[in-house]
Length: 438
Image 1 (cartoon, helix red, strand yellow):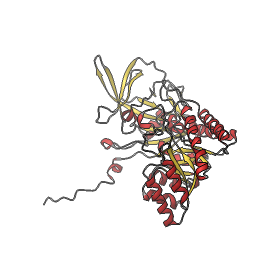
Image 2 (cartoon, rainbow, N blue to C red):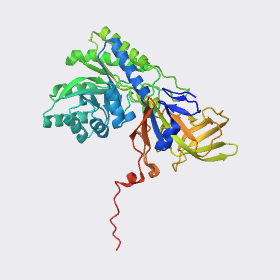
Image 3 (cartoon, rainbow, N blue to C red):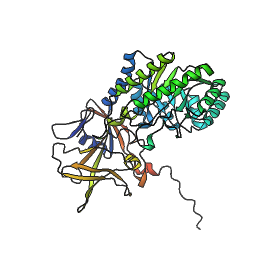
Image 4 (spheres, rainbow, N blue to C red):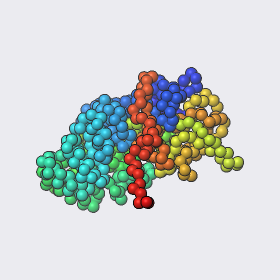
């Protein structure tokens, strides 16, 4: 069993996170329950920033809030001096409600609506990342109408494929995101943006994928971009002030994963940018990165209460919990793997292999296929590790199951930051049928 951050086995043989026994959390807040180790989030944020500070470079470390967005989480990012990456009007609204400094907000997305873009302009956020020609036209119209100029980056696809699942690769040529670097689209976009008084073109952005365990892709992306920058300098007299190389830094979900330290990714990115800038005669641009999963992923643990069990002779034993694909869609979506432990029996030997089933009415609602556990009973507490990214963000009400609560733990104290949904919450937007039956 691999324990992350402040997680440990306490003297009672229970899992403890942030100095708080998880059995106490389950008793007070119920299950399923997302628990976040705040100290680990702070540690990661500071490591990313320290790497740039020690290199003496201008940089922004923007939390990719799609990993987990809530008012409290955005406020925590603000406390740590991070910038913020949002990808929807909802994430932008959350950031505004959290009081996050608007000048440090970057707005992504491949199909931003006019309403979303207008919200961004009204609040004068720091930067909009333009993803396509349609978006350039809409944003330009809005800027003219509102008599504003906005800072923008152009999102490009550099033709670099990360070694990851097909659904979470984004930098290859065949992608729904961005302007292709090699077919002339970027040049057309640069011309349009530079010719418009609505835009202040800061630079370019790319994101090559997620859950990446090496730095070669980031280095190759930087190489490809700088080769193009030399052409754009001559053709358009365009020299970027900002180079955003995205995020996607991997974390350890299981023993099969071998992530690099957070600061190592940054060091290699800095090295690649410095080498290319020197080689092609550029000043080193301000470097932006967008960690999301690597800030909050392994800081999150989901607690479940064990319920029914089913033995299929000669095949497997199913152990069901009170959550599933409604609070963790990743196993069903792209076969994500997790480690887990019986949180109230950490000092008990594991003598059987079981499969952890969710409670949704789907055969595919399986959280973990083969997990070694001690003898378990109805009411035992299962802790699934590394659920801090894309757990609550992808949570849903399938089978009309309410979404879980979220708790932050730090220095022996717990704080409820998202309340558990109720059945009343589930139906609050429903409207009754206007019956035509007389």
